[in-house]
Image (tube, rainbow, N blue to C red; front, side):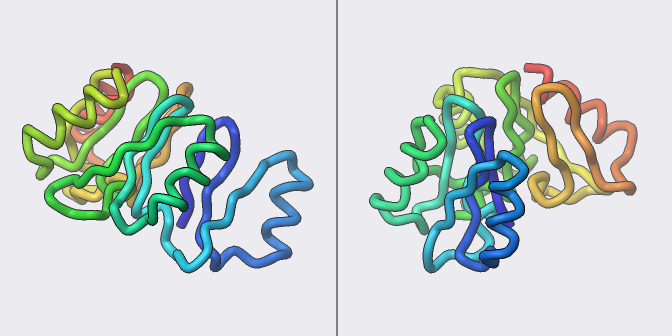
Length: 159
């Protein structure tokens, strides 16, 4: 439903005012993107770069860049606009939907400037962003994630 980096969280307009206030009270900044709901399926970012779906307007992309302090690039993953569902990125590396084309993978790696690995999580889910969360210190995967999948995830996130 959301995506974020060390600057804050980007969320859709479905975030309620109460939730927004609680996050801000906890010291977490939030940027709501109007007329969007599952923003986390459409964007992946770290502290310097991000990739997003063309579903975001140019104006929304600029708002996200300013809020997050990053440079965004429109992309697809596995020929899908569900970029956030297809990538989990940290400052060290990323895990990419195993169905991503070689061209997509190369463009994403070049944009982020860090290496990554293709993989799955949660017993074969190609949409790794739906089954995995990570930061620079740790990653959490769905309970059905296999040892082989964890090895690929570790490889991608270590960079």
